[in-house]
Amino acid sequence: MSTRPSPLVPIPLEAPVRRLLAPPSPARPLGEALLGAEAPRQLDLLRAARALGTLQLPRADLRQVDFRALIAQGLPADLLVGANLSGATLSGARLAGLSLRNAQLDGALLVATDLANSDLSSASLRSAHLTGACLARAELSFCDLRGASLLTADLAHVTATGVDLRDTLLHSARLAHAVLRGADLRWSRLDGANLMRADLRGARFAGASLELANLTAARLSTTTDFGYAFLHRTRWDQVALTRAHLGGGVGECFTDLAQARDTYAELKRHFEAEGRADDARWAHRLASRMDTLTHRPDRARTYYAADWSPPHPPTISPRHPLAFPATTARLREACRPRDLRASLRHGGLWALGQLNRTTTDYGTSYRRILSTLAVIWLAFGAFFQLVGGLAHLERSSGAQWYDGLHYSAAALTPIDAYPLVTTSTVAHLAAIAEGVTGIVLIGALGFVTACRLRRQ
Image (cartoon, rainbow, N blue to C red; front, side):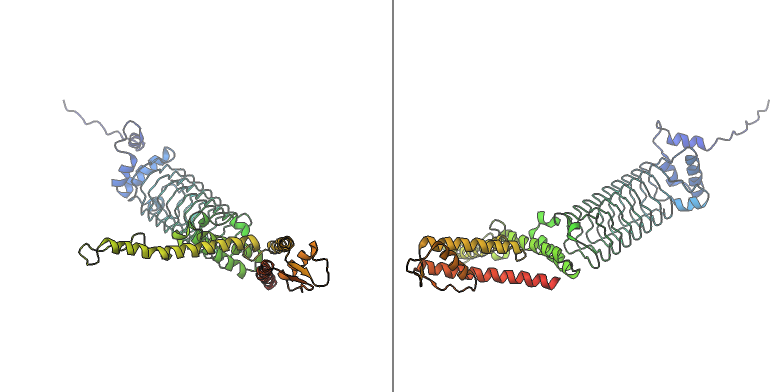
């Protein structure tokens, strides 16, 4: 009795895909099947997986899968919409022009991936690695890129309204002509980034690092926030930057006072070039204050280490003919006068800076100068009356209480003191000291007036 072979029953393609995706057998996930398969097989597997619902490829290695070519061969254009690619490896993949809306790409490896003209709106790319990736003209609106690495990435002409870029690494990234309206870039690193002509209206850069960044001709609005951002050597050409955009100041004032001083000096020059006199005065005051703080006795050695002796005296070999204790002692003694001179010099500069701030607000405040003049006038007037060193040439009864104020005003200003004269050495020396102080303060008053007239 001959036996006939049973006919082959066709197995639908969805069955192996279901087995590959089933939780009980994770040994060979769909990502492995795609990696080693030919293009037609990849096409069939992805078509079947897409028929089952949203594509699920977490932690898959997809470097050899050309999604763009497969979509051109008939896969749905929305293949990757909402796909789960968390932790997947897509370095060097060609995803240009594809739609990845609402996709999950948290922790994905996308180094040097081509995502130009792609749609990543509302996608999640937290802690994703996009170093060197091309995202030119991509759609990133409301995308979550917190903690992502976009070092040297190309984001030129990208549309990223409301994108979340907090704590993102964007060193040397290209963001020219990017639309970043309402973007959240707080605490991001944009050192050396190119943001020429970028639309930054409503963007938040609080605490971000923009050292050496180029913001030439960038567009700002009143809600753009650079409060306490690090702006050392940032380019602001043709940018309508104001003091209000900087909030309380720059971030360098918490980390490096010398850099903060230089940053405020750069901002002062920018404000002056833009005709913003009030903002320039604000930057000048803060630059001078940072400079004063660098001379404070407990900080001066940190910022001006060259003015002090080395931490240890030069060592001498034991075999050297001068290697004996007296030589070492002399070397240490030689270091002390230099340290003393440096300490006195910087301590004096700090004291003068504090005095300048208190009396004139670094040569910018009418109110402080006039208040200081009034206090000095009254103080010296009381002093002249107390020491009794004044005489009235036309009155035999002696000087009255108001004569002290008269003589103090004459010493402080060019007013003639006649008929009052000093009769004691102490009063004479006090008048000289008050006269020198008056010359300095009145000169500062004239300087402030000239500066304000020039800037009007």
